[in-house]
Image 1 (cartoon, rainbow, N blue to C red):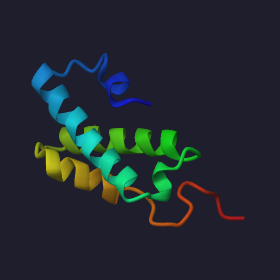
Image 2 (cartoon, helix red, strand yellow):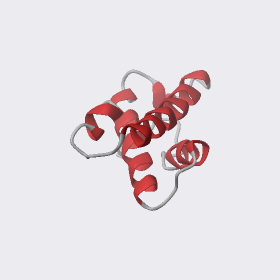
Image 3 (tube, rainbow, N blue to C red):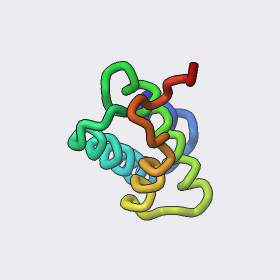
Length: 88
């Protein structure tokens, strides 16, 4: 789910949308650059949704720094070799 889709009807002003989208892109691009399992095609959609929701939540809680928004979103991801997998 793209970040802009989550923000479409949220009523954020254009400057806020710019910061949120930039934070999201920073977080996603870092995962891609690191060849993270979170960025693999089988996990990409869930990862992107989780990043977007965490960035919005952090913003709502008063975090307005693009760098810290991205860092908080990355920190919210599970630290496993196979993200979002269910244990047997």
